[in-house]
Image (tube, rainbow, N blue to C red; front, top):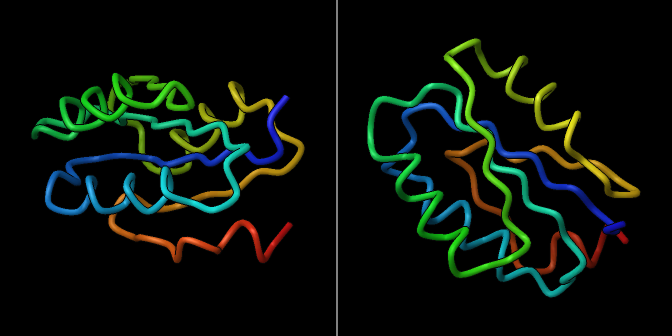
Length: 103
């Protein structure tokens, strides 16, 4: 079990996704489960997510047909095993100490 499950719904976010994922994987608090939920993207978002997943074992990718952000978040919740849940939008990035301060 991880301390925090971070759920990122992804839909056509290729312009911002790498920065978003980088900001999560470089957290000073390392005990994270990172759930990337591809919501039927038609751009290169899935490929970007897969590249990161190959480099970081904490990343899990789940793909669904386009059903919207709420459905993607619910999909992530089904796979989450953290003590706490966090949602980060694919076009956002967070400070490297974000989760350390929360914990």
